[in-house]
Length: 144
Picture 1: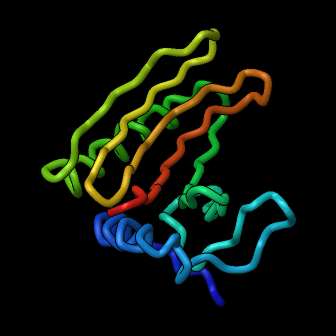
Picture 2: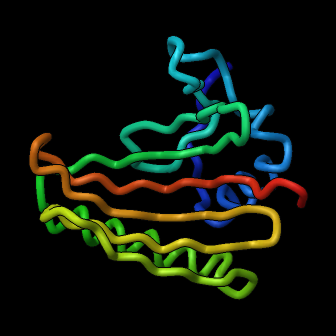
């Protein structure tokens, strides 16, 4: 299978929410080693990587964007993705914000809780790696 680059963000997020009901079976491709991560046939625009992680209790789709440590562009990307998620699904979701961590690296999270899935965007500084990461994660909610 080839990898399609997502053109329209909202359409892609809605598709991923729908895919969460089937544990992303239509977009998960071959396993990447024995980590539980699978290659995917859909990536979000500009992401450094996207995978589906398959675990015994739940599966999730996630993408990461990597930037130099504490680059302004990383925080701008986080703000932009959080705003886009709010525009796409904010009316149907409960928004949770989290910023509590017990270490000096920066971390922020916006989680959109929907009936059928949780969609989150986070930004995390990793000084030891010399990078700042932005992540989007879509995880289905069991029983919905």
